[in-house]
Length: 150
Image (tube, rainbow, N blue to C red; front, side):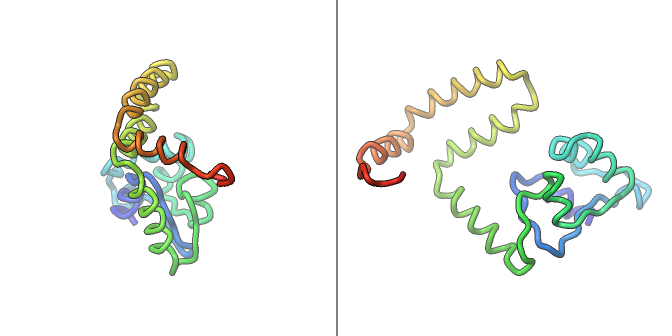
């Protein structure tokens, strides 16, 4: 629990097994939850649910975690690594620059208002259209077979 939970909530995506239990243990040990738990958890599941988990030192199952938005997907325990690697392979196939900017913009949405976020996104999108990866992607799209669904 403890450190593993802190690590899990610092990840962008979380694949959990059906037998998983997630939770914070700090208060049970006479300490606050460290490693960013008090900051990351409310951003993932809202302040009220975060306080419920933190103040009660409450553990949740994989299904409960998914229902509250703490887990992205719940799979059979033996398939957790396979699912995680499948997602990692897909993400790794994308432009590293575009992935990094998408993550920066998405997490940055909590730091400023919608208008500022939209302006920042528009600036970065314009910059992205000029990258070699985007140019190759547009060329591939334009050269596709008209009968292709992509």
